[in-house]
Length: 219
Ligand code: LAC
Image (cartoon, rainbow, N blue to C red; front, side, top):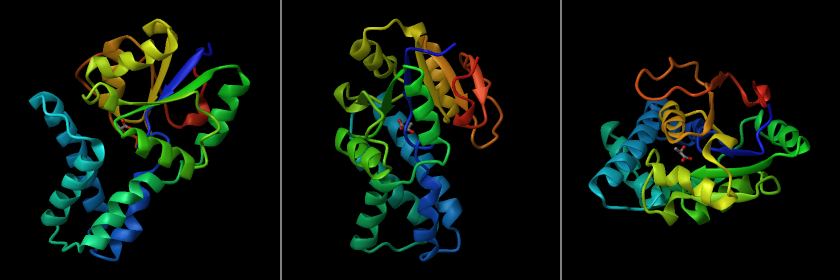
């Protein structure tokens, strides 16, 4: 069945942060590990922020996470390179399966939205730079609730915005923990397992798993 509404995670689901690697290879041969750690720390800081009850926006967490990852790999970043790398998060390319999938879902009459940890300006810039701005009915940012995924009030933003019940909302994320959080909340969740990872072993199971967005809409 096709949902009336598909809500997508952004980073890692629609746009590819692995594309940051080439810029970082200019600074260290450990670019791929550095990007992995950068992402891991960015998410860890978002969890810490929500748990400590001190909201700091995602751009700032991304900067703190970069500083950590650079320190771990002994990379000295001058102010310009640091700024450029942080800014690159707003210019990430879409995965090749994204546009065809969004086209198909729209043709089936579904509404589409993004629900992301990113700030509202970052979401707008990223979606535009990726050439995806025509597809979405809403770009929902955690910034309006000052808490990060997987806090339930974040997922509630989609319920509030579209007036649908939780189970009527199709949620798509490549991030296993985000898929679990959305399933705990009660969305109809599709985990896009782009990286061929094992399923999460804690928390609610997503309704289904796909390998790429080309499988949408999935039963
Ligand atoms: C986001 C992160 C979790 O876009 O990928 O919200």
